[in-house]
Image (tube, rainbow, N blue to C red):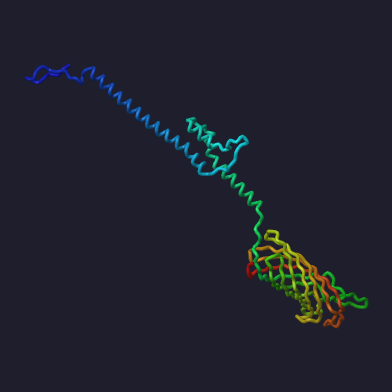
Length: 311
């Protein structure tokens, strides 16, 4: 169909855009352009997918190459590691399965765990370093108990009359100080005074001891350390810090000390103490013969250390 031309122009011309062939051609052109655009989008998406896959494959391989594997080979001479085979198959174009990818990703973690286990085993088998050779001055106080096992001739029963025992059990305080060597030895001295049960013959019967002592402390590697002790000294006994008689004392014992810090220890010890006392006449007029009394001593102590030097 054509349109009427204006007057004086001429006959009406047909509209070319309304021709059936032109409409079909425009439709084919639009369809072709749409196909080209779809193919372009598809190509871009395929390129992105390929780049993502390559990056995912390269990440575990780079991590494995950054962690050197221990040299190991199978009896046939082939390498025991699985990563090179994975890389070769990837380069050849084969798609690794999900299990193979998991093994490749877990390989560095397995190597790290194996090395940690080897280091722990070496640390356990490695000998402990020697202790620091430190010298200390060690001193402290203790609560003591003297249990009378046998008073000996100092307290004898009389057939003709009653004679009270002047030497019983008691408790007191001990002051100690000494030198702790870098090895297992301790050498020092102690002063102990004990209020004894004197059967009221003394107002305040004080049994005093002044001893030289030594300890042997084996190093077991723990905070709690047992020890053996020995000592020798003199004693004095009388009313209100007096010395009406005296003698010698020998002590043999054992104990344990616990380090609550590097410079503070607490401990408990027990010992057997035979005491030789010279004969004397007490304040009540009773004659006491020379005797060997036997005591069992207990000590609950706390001691501190002062570092003297290292060697």
